[in-house]
Length: 118
Image (cartoon, rainbow, N blue to C red; front, side):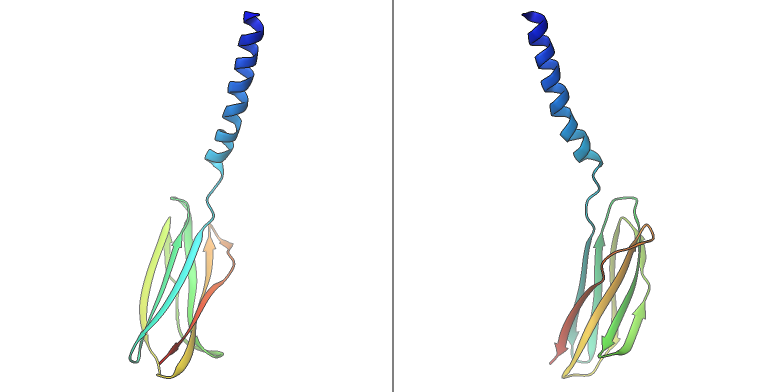
């Protein structure tokens, strides 16, 4: 009876450790968040990317007016990228900020935001 109880307890312990081990090595999904705001004729273009601590992050960030590129930047960081730059824009015009992000040289899904400068 003691051997059976010890065996069952050992199996329960072993099974309960498997999901915890798998969860510990599962990488978190990166968070990619572009921002675009206006103050008169100045656009503030931002990008926040959160990845694993040692992940190499690089990005191509473009401010577009229709199909015209207004400005392009190439920020990079390790673990977390927090980027903000300004560009001169026109009022009553719609702009799109696009970000193509690479984490450890692997392209992520592009992210964008579109706003009108009123």
